[in-house]
Length: 444
Image (tube, rainbow, N blue to C red; front, side, top):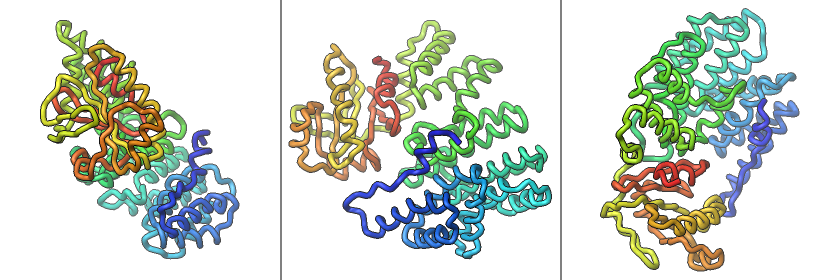
């Protein structure tokens, strides 16, 4: 198991002072399960799991998918399999729907009996319903089962192909694969569905048949910028499915394919998608080289600004007042505008503010800079004192819930970049946000 999971699987709940007592109890139960599984205390683990599910179902689901899953293949005493057997026999129908695919994978891992493995193929067929199941992460475990069966020479390629295609058909019944939902809960589901779909199509290409269409579909479903705002929803899936190698970059893989087999225009389109999803120096450089090759007389900066603008939404027509100036978003500007939305109550926000202050000062020192930097505070207390105490000089304005909702802000900090043409995009959480700003605007 990768070293990264030594810290991931022993995570604990962060409990704020305002959380209810039931949540504190749920966190305590959740954190205790790891040791119980490790020590083989099956009865106690089952008892606590039932109690945890009673008071906080999502926490049990998260603990099972994001901790237990990474222990199954390194369990010589089969404690996790015994736990599943015990929990499944408690006959809690809701829990059984969630753990059934994972339980079947655990059975597959822990047997080499050909007869049993053959029966698992039949059972896998019966588990595949007509729609996907985000709560059980069923598709994750179906793929892992197929891998295990293939390693044990207990499934032929045609059967494996048919099962992967059935998984794809299930996933493609989800309604927001193309459109972006307006709420956070659905956006998280979208991110997960698209990543698993991309993996399935790449699986077909890599293991079954080298069809270009499979590689293209993997690229098309590869997490886009909106999905990357919710990367945590598919982070664990990506790592467990790619246990023996790096997490796949589906678009990059397809780009290399079409660069060798297809037209320059297709390559430019795909490189643009890749650079937008991850505007690293290398990706921007590769895109620019391709653009210049095709459009020797064209202006790359103009092309890129138009492309980035086309990926955004129309900015809300609001005017926001700051202490010494006013930001009028009812009018278009010749400048790029960066807005950081934060609050004094938000620890991740406050942790980043020194970096933001440095970025703001550096931008102030650039003569004729085409980037304006503002911040919006939501729900802060003693904002003026906070700014003074920390010697922050970047512009800040306290906004109300209405303005917050206009920008569809559901997490903090939220980082927004507005193009000169008046569209805005959100920069994903947990990335090098300065790189995104500098390379979207080409101001580095």
